[in-house]
Structure formats: structure tokens, C-alpha cells
Length: 173
Image (tube, rainbow, N blue to C red; front, side, top):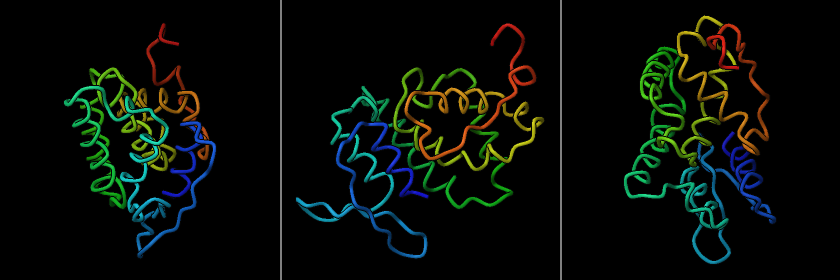
């Protein structure tokens, strides 16, 4: 899955020459063989490299605080979301829902790499949510729908139907 995410990120960033990736280990950790130096290993490491290569540093955060928040969510994606158990999903969604109460994006009011990689990582969970669960996690659903409609983000993933008449109060169409 990480290889498709990296490919989609390259397209989003407008990188013309696609990179060649491989994987290592049982968890299929992505590896980018760099012509100029050692191989880059790991989804977050490679994604951050692609952001710099595309000269889009704002996607990593504009301030020191924003960069820390972005890194925190990228770490959350790898350590908590990836390979989480069914039991952990509700806890993760509940925490994310609470966090997003007063935010448009994960780093506040600015779209970042954290939004892209968390969207990719949570997509398979949101696809499976029943209408009632989407209503229970209203802030997650709102954020998810916003990110999936952000231009160029959803390359390799199917759209998830969010029933606006059930999820959103009237007047917010």
C-alpha cells in the first residue's frame, strides 16, 4: 500500500520522473534507492524527501510548531494507525474526532503532508464505516470528505460516499 501512496504523492506534487521503489521486510517497508547517496527507508522519510524534491516545504509546516504537529501526525500514522487492531480503530477514531473538533486540517488551518498520509492510512477504515459510525465521528467524516476532494490527492483510492443529508446539518451543503 505504501508504494501506491508514494506514487500518488509524486503525482500530487507534480514530480515528472517517477521514482523506483522496492520494499523490505515482512511489513513491506518502502525503500527508495537514491542515485546521490544511501537508500531512503520508510514511508515518512521518503514522503518528506519528495516534498523537498518538489520544493513544497509548506507541506511540512510553515512554523516550528506546525512542523512538530505534522511530524507528530506522521508518527501517529506509522505507530498507531498502520497495523492497528479492530479494537483500536474506535479509540483512534474517537481521539481523531475530538482533535478535529476545532480544526479544518490536522495542523490547524493549513493543508500538509500529515493530511495526505493520514487520509491514505485511514481510507480503508472509513470505507467500512456504517452511516451511524460516520455520524458518530462527524469531525473525522468532515475532514476525510474535505481531504478526498482536495485537488490531486485521491489518485489510487476510490471516493467514499458521505451522505451529506444525514451527516451534515442542513444549510452546510
